[in-house]
Length: 407
Image (cartoon, rainbow, N blue to C red; front, side):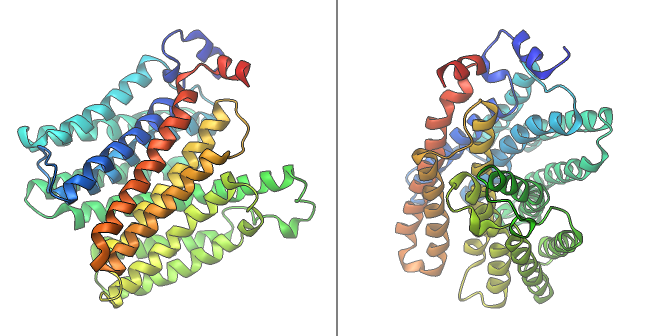
């Protein structure tokens, strides 16, 4: 096949297997909602699953390594062909990768009845296969600048393996090295990829609406010297956090990184994007990277003010949750031939997720109201991702030609 369009037209199977974002983004949204729908009654002691992990570790794992692995796979399988100029994976090979992700979810869900090694192999099958696919595409396309993204994917898979090893040893994996390494890797991925797409998409939107007539008012181009300094500072802070989460040096490094990334974000003209939720949500999602760093630093120095779990949720639910929701909505609209504009339903998804983030953080600030706030946060999370599946599911299930005819 000589082009992506021709390859897709040659596929006569289910439309959901015509591009990487289709099965993985829909699967991610459904799983995020379902896993939270299970977690809220688990937290109240009303539901018990046959999982080998303790309940909190299951919850942490299935968001970080369950939900996010699907989003990362969908994003990379969609973006890498654009980066390398090679054809995307479609059809049954794509379906096979998605089946590996599903197998991991099933294995975790019944892990109490399986050997720990078998569970780990099933769960790690997707990231290993995805890493091999991405490496092949980058090498064949000689797209060396994105080897960094591949390295982060390898680190993410390694973190998942460490999480499984810690859980098998009987450790509290929800606060272990594997979780911190996995979350730190995701934050670096947001900082690297978000540092490219947020200013780029903002500039494109400003120029299209006629507000980009002076360079001074446009976002600073990505990957300037300051951006590299900010990335190195964040890397140093996160590495310290993985190794020494309670150290004062860690808190200081994260505070410096947080300040630098707030400055970095301020250079992208986010204040000029309030008219379009599809753009401002990218800035807000990125803002949770430095806000989380500052909160974790503050929680380390003054744990009585903000617990570690609440501070980390600014990263987990805020940075990772909101940024991935922003990317999934934008990519689905763009690749399904729809206008890049957020309707009322999409805006409501973003607002619901913000309620979930602040509800979860507030539960750490006001522990006396934690039960109510956990329920509010959980229901808002379900509304955000269940709403994504309801609104965007029909788009990914229909062929592009039919979508274009309907629009």
